[in-house]
Structures are given as structure tokens and as C-alpha cells.
Image (tube, rainbow, N blue to C red; front, top):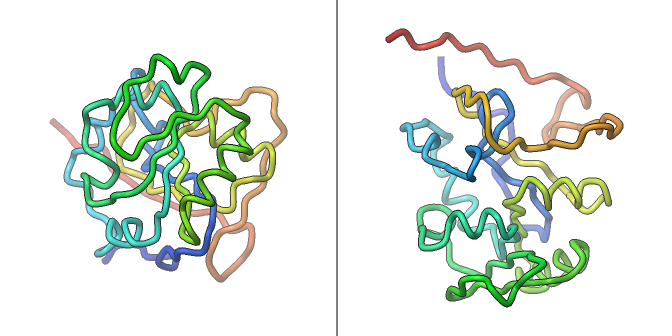
Length: 190
């Protein structure tokens, strides 16, 4: 049985994408924004990384994630080059880097700035907290998730917003608009 390819390839259409690889239990990073759990030889659809490298025009992230990643490779293992915007309350003490702009403004203004810089391509939101704020304001066009067959048990959740009303989603593909996605895994034995 092959891989499940139930979504269309990503297109560069000036969208605001909340884009993450996520553990099956809903975490997008470790407790201190670690991403080492992702380096486990995960199989993805052929050409998937190339799709995002071609369709991404700008990246919007948060300060805590930036501080944890300073000195690390750029998105997609360095294959993507372009403007990165980091939203922070304290831009004056941020560690600078090439093509990185520190913004201290409202999230809606940060998206406007990133969309302009993306020049018709997509803006990838790589922050759970910023993504949640944009989702609440209706500024996320798509939530693009790659569910990785791992259970982390703790870390940074995709959405950690106690008390909000359920947010209904529709698959970005043909078929039933409220269809559930089914996955089935077996734990590895030592």
C-alpha cells in the first residue's frame, strides 16, 4: 500500500499558510522549541519540500522560536531563501541575521508586511502562537499539516487556546467537506 496523497500540491497564490509538521498528539515542537524529533527519516510525498521552496515567498515566526533556532539552517534545510519576519515585543535585543526583519506591531500588520514581501507567493506562519492569533482574526487561508508518526507527550502544541469555541475546518481537497482523516499506526517495539 502506497502513501496517502489526499491533498493537491501546494500552489503559490498569495495565501497565508499555518504550516507545520506535527506529532500525532498535536505537538509542533519540543518544550524549548526543539525540532530534533523531526529528524527520523520520515517519508513524505516525493517533491513535497520542493513544492514549499517554490511557493513560499516569506516566513512569519515568533521571537521564542527564533531565539531557539538562531544559527540553525533556514527553513527547508537551507533550500529556501527569502525574507523572514520575526514578531517580537523587544526587537532591540534580537540577534540579527541576513534577510531577517524584526517586527514590533500587531499580527495583522505583520501579515500585511509579509504578504507584500512575498510578492504573490505564500506566507508561511511558523509559530503556534501567531498562527492562533491569526486564526482567531480570520487571517489564515489554510492550515497545512504533515502528521508525523511519533508521540511527543509534551512540547509546543499547534493550538493551545483553552476556552475558545471549536473552529470547524474543511479539507482543501475534493470530497465531503467535513470528512475526518483516518490514520492507523502500530507502536515500534524495542
